[in-house]
Amino acid sequence: MAYDDQGLGLGTGDRTLEIGMSISLPTGDQITEMRSEDLAAVHQLECASQHDHWSLQHFAEEFDNQVSSIDLYWCGDKLAGFLCSWLIAGELQIQNLATLPSMRRRRIAVRLLEHVIARSKSAGLASIWLEVRVSNTAAISLYKRFGFSIGGKRSAYYADGEDALIMTMRGET
Ligand SMILES: CC(C)(COP(=O)(O)OP(=O)(O)OC[C@H]1O[C@@H](n2cnc3c(N)ncnc32)[C@H](O)[C@@H]1OP(=O)(O)O)[C@@H](O)C(=O)NCCC(=O)NCCS
Image (cartoon, rainbow, N blue to C red; front, side):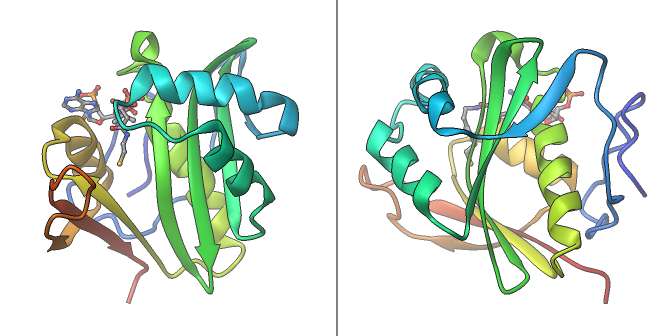
């Protein structure tokens, strides 16, 4: 089953990686790779989105990291979301994902995920994994609805002692 942009045909844990090689976006929206001049805006979005946010330096290091990609979602000229991921030997690791609070529930996170997965498929994508706070019900709901399943838990993973869920999605077997 592929994601249906009109009808939110999201899977419920059985989707694997059946996403096409490209996705369509609403008119006026675009997804671009982060440029150095976008750093400040991305950091601002991060600060508006998360309590324990990444520093500007962290984003700069990701920008310089060969295995890291930061994809930006634009609604016109407004930065609405970003997704930072690592692709290593066919394994996609979702490092960070955020949508501007005022732009949530418009499928921006879904489209960013789909975009990165579609691109990674041409590089031999086999599996995806991520860590998410056990209290982050919005993100867990997004990933479950997208087709991820819970693969484990890391106790006291975060600096404040909170546990992380490990969520995964695998290619067709
Ligand atoms: C998690 C987050 C990225 C979701 O972004 P978004 O663009 O609003 O998500 P989407 O619109 O693509 O959501 C798609 C589906 O995910 C689920 N979902 C998303 N947010 C949800 C919420 N707050 N509560 C319940 N389900 C939610 C829903 O099923 C939603 O479909 P629906 O709107 O038709 O019900 C956003 O809430 C965010 O930036 N949170 C703070 C940063 C964060 O926690 N990042 C994740 C780190 S692992």
